[in-house]
Structure formats: structure tokens, C-alpha cells
Image (cartoon, rainbow, N blue to C red; front, top):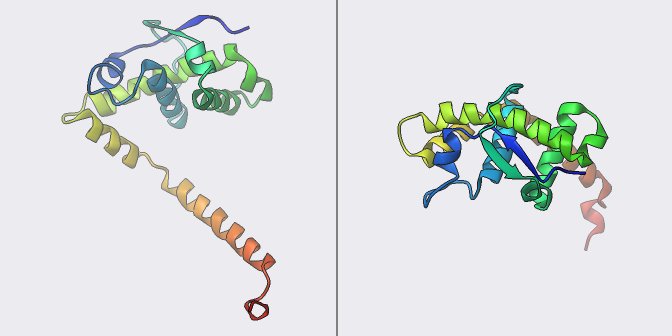
Length: 158
């Protein structure tokens, strides 16, 4: 059974990016999931994070998109399919990678001079995995070739 609430590290990135009129993220929940994704992508997990924020699990568990991301992160970290439906494992992965990702976001987005939205866009562009993107293009080209080999030759079409 999922806990009603859990604690996570809430640093200045949450204040700057998820609060107020100009918030880029609609909530701390969305920023935590994004931060956990950043932490995972950059392999930055914090075991002993500061428990300065509190969140209800149902904010994630009842949001289909956030729940899928949370389950995917947990599975990717543990390689155990049971983690996809285990809130305790998902919370553990979210909070540890979330702390790492939030620290990266604070350092590389919030602490940089300029507008936070511009800095976030630059951050995302700078860290896009071009090798992974080219691999996806190769897979798409292969699928396209296989699909086109299944279609009838042009001469039989009238």
C-alpha cells in the first residue's frame, strides 16, 4: 500500500521554477518527476538527501503520465518489473534521483544569469543525446525499409 505522503529534497529550483506567476512547471510534483528524470539521465542519485519538502503520493499515482514516468524510472533503475507497480520503490527512486536532478537544475538553470525559461531551454538543448537521436533515426529508417518491402510494387497500382 502506498504511503499517503513522502518527503523529498526541495531546493531553490522548486521555488524558482514551480511557484508564482511565472512558474515554468505547474507544480512541485511535475518538477520533482522532471528532476528525477534529469538525475537518472545524468546518473546522479543522492542517497542522503535533505527531506525539506513533503508531497502526497496520489499527486503522482493518480496522474497517468506522471505514474508512467515514475514506474519507468523505477524499472530502469531496478530492472525489476515489480517496481512498476510498487509505490515504495518508485518513491525511493524519485526522491533520490530527484534530489540529484534538482541540484543539477539549480546549478545549471537557476544559478545561471538570465531568464529561467531561456536557461532551461538551453540546458535541454545542451544535454540532448545526439548519439541516441541518431540511433532512433537509424531504427526509423530500418522500419521504413521493412514496411516498404511489404507494400506491392508500384507497377501493380493503377
